[in-house]
Length: 231
Image (cartoon, rainbow, N blue to C red; front, side, top):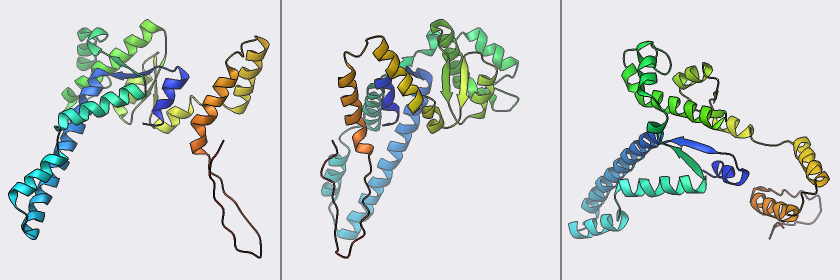
């Protein structure tokens, strides 16, 4: 999550399809309900071993689970979307049913020639929606997925570029020192440095927590080091 929050500071659109959100929600709710059931079972076993009354056991359970799995999952996803400034694409506005069925009957990615290809309809809708959004907004999209069918679709698209791992995708948006210097020099030449100090101060404050300081001492005396604050 912290890695994706950088998009909110760099002005890079971070897209997520509602179809994918539905699947994520389903997985998270299922996982939350499973863990809840496991903990309730554990509480029941604990109460049997410790002679805990049912009322007390139920009270503990209620104090832990004051919200449903659906409510907790929604809060988590809402917080994620807000912190990353994600743009949610509503697939129904971009994906055409005729394009989906064409991919299906021609057994093209993400369907392919497999028996359970009907399960790929959500992926097909999401990919077509992303491609249409890209075409309309005239912006290419970097698609991050470990799904081979998504890779196959992106390889045939002029708008979608596939990367399997998130760290590799994030590195595509990192500026090197030479790039940063070139941008800095151009800003000075154009006189566009009115907010430069503020931007530098903001960036330093954001990255200071990631600074690691290692002290090596060669001395006859024993010593310890501590870091109070990085400014």
